[in-house]
Length: 282
Image 1 (cartoon, rainbow, N blue to C red):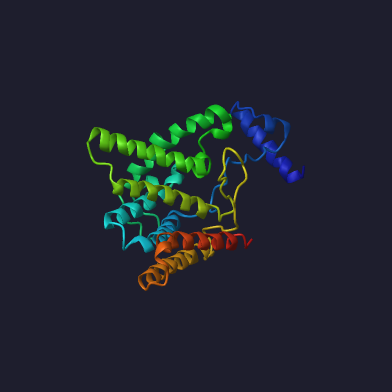
Image 2 (cartoon, rainbow, N blue to C red):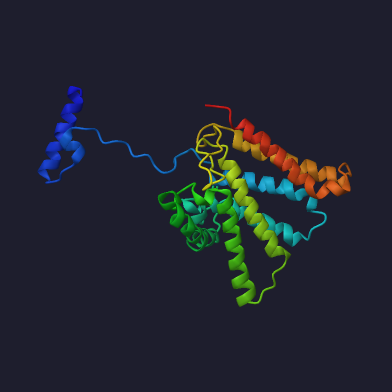
């Protein structure tokens, strides 16, 4: 140990001794080891506004060919579900955007219903679906960021539980009909959460899609909070795809039997390209 470090540790030991506090590392002169968090934190994650914009652009591409055939309220319900689903997986983090009334982004407009969904998903959905994982996996199944709720089975269970609550409260208790708009919202919620996982799969932390069956993480090299322009480019490209596929359907450039699936096929192809592009960089 260098003289400077020795003086530092000796000074710390004297301070601790003066207060009657003992520390095993200070007493032996060893440096305290760094504790690694359960999940990487910091700028290595897609921001809330990016989650919303990319997810809505993807949903627009999927829905564009269907806009001429489905009721407008279904499209609105689906987009609202995507909006909530795009933030829902981050209910496993203590200070995520879904717990605040301010919209993520620079303008910070208020959306007063966001905390309702955020805390509802956290306490009524996320914690209950975590219990079986805790029982069978122990510490691996404990609630943590990018754990259960950032996996394929977690997103599916979240959607099923939200659907059960919607049926229980809306249909069984209040007598509201279980109609296409409710189903569209649930499909949108599931889709938005899947889009969230795709977006996080482009970052260095990645996503363990098959948790708890596998700990392998699909990851890229995007680090937000710097000058990486790829998330913004994804929004523009996906938005252009939505406009393009809608125009192609209107102009009769796509066979009628393929129209319902053309948007989803285009979105899947673009996401394949996005995931490949995200692997480049530092």
